[in-house]
Image (cartoon, rainbow, N blue to C red; front, side, top):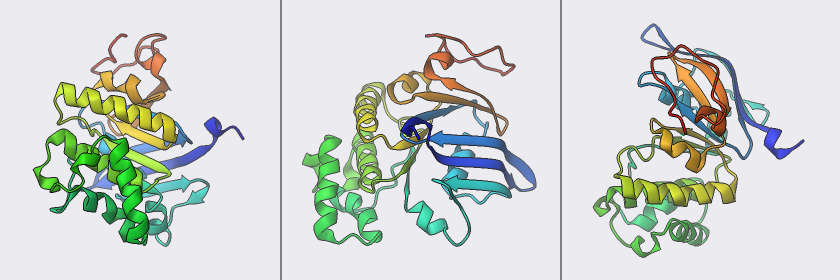
Length: 245
């Protein structure tokens, strides 16, 4: 089967309920192996809830999740989580050195320090922050901290990467530089990625496909060119529009 058409993650009849309220109702959703998918929609659409559910950090009330053909169950949740990495808007770094932060996830997964250290250093170098490896992580700028967060995620060599608005708190020059570097890394690694964003200018830098979400449901999907106006989506009744290219 062509790599592009291989399904890395698939959700079927997915429902998430909180406080008696239905948050998600997803009939069918899939991430193709090696593809970056942008998930967009207005505030409160359910984007982060979907990301957390797909990353097995929220338990759905109904439905199935398939990871490379394996159905997620209570028994294999930890095994499947270890094939993923999640990057949030807030880096959530520990009060230790930059290098130790990137090594920690590897060591928690059983990789000895003699192997974890060179891998961590390689990713710090690829993200342009090798010179910061001995610095205390809590003394970094926002852009530096997010680069450490990304290095920590990529060092795990995940099969699926989840990005939840990782640039939202950064100023424009910092965001632009990081987007360029991340776009290059995603192109090189071909890691399957779901990218949640509210800034549509970020989409062409990273994604090949765009999915639109509203009120907990997926209402449209297509290529970046379709989403950004080269071949516009059919008219849909939502309270905002994707910008024209």
